[in-house]
View 1: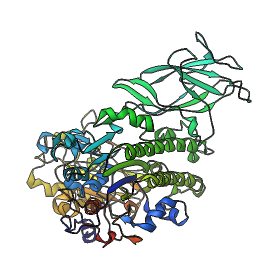
View 2: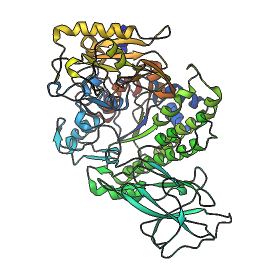
View 3: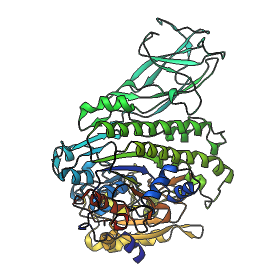
View 4: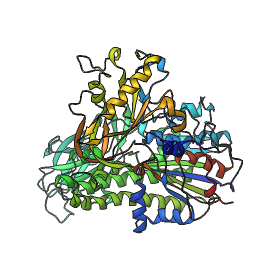
Length: 635
């Protein structure tokens, strides 16, 4: 425990008097979920040339300690504020609601929202110092009001801040449409039918709340026999076609439709379409649609320009559909790689939208700091990391060998976006490439609530819901690697202060007894009441008892699971203790004021914000607990 305390403890340095040679601008690029060991291997193989450029010409770290738990919202909140989760209030992707006296251990809200953030982010510190900041996409950037109208971080900075948000405007799911949902039939009632060597066939596809007529034709200009083109229209009129789709080979950017507007319950939203397959006889097809999105901006008048430059916000690729087999059988299921290639097309579409939105902001808006974010490689790591982990029982080397090139392609797509941004960054710009956590392959789960229930610490009612009147401890559905104690300072709590120690001891005994065969599964329990300050955990919006598991195991937050330990298909995950090698990630700085060719040995995500503040010659965020990475700066 002493090693962990030293590794995570906040070091003095938030008030460093040192100021590096001031940079004119800072571009912050976040790659979500970088596995540092894999990135280093790709660097050695020469597959990430633009990342290699940053390493050679700047300061870099590939064993960065992140927040606990190692989750996206918590990790990024620490990056932006220089503060641990105990201070930021972001203890996971969803967090307990506060104040405790008004909410139960079952109540939670999003950790991605600005309303959950308790520590000042760097964009507010910069705006207070007279700098202009643009957020293309990041965590805790929305809702905008606390930043532009004023709130817990001080007076509003609407003149110096411009914030965009895509995830908050998602108005539905992505989908695959086939002849099963919308069969093609002889076309009827169309005007201005286009030329077709075979009788046109039609279907009506529903996207969001819009029913769109589509028409399959055999283009006479195409030498192949059979249906080869699908037209998407608003009405049955071949003169009002909004998209002309062909099942082009993988990697063809022109295969995607332009942005189409569809109706949703929350208003008009944009989608992109891709025709992955069309049978020549018109008997079946595979049409993919991205999620309908209504982007948000602190200055809404800018939205048409960014959409014109970048298209609709994509957010994520088709990982859910890939896992379900909707893109075809996956390689682990015996597929030939078609599903993986289709999934990679959705990844590259997402990356192109990120790139073009960022380039538009760099070119069109005034800025001194600019944030941008990609959900990769995290999304693909979740899909494939488990299959690439040779230490897992049942590892299939032949599957790993076939999947690895696809994961490499995801990393290379991140590197290509980085290279494109490096080419257009203005002179005097520091580039900060960061990540929030690593990932680890797992194929077994541990149901903590079943352990608590069998120990008499958790009781369910007749409907299978938590009975708060008889529950002392719960592993909440927000799944943040911590247990909540149902203490009397919480609404409907029953554990009195004098009972807490006994409940903690009972939880520890129950977890210590969990075995998978002869192997202990729960490897550590930290009481936030004892070590919370030192580890940066706990607090009003955090947990009470933080846990770690043996390698290869993940948390299962379900209620009333039949088994404590259960086997799963392999996958990648995170949220474990951040000193674990698999949870460590990367941080790179490059540009004026940054030392060249320096490898940082003790970097933490908590140190990014104060270091960037030093490069800009401004004070760090007011709640920062990190240190300035002096070794990264030119003297």
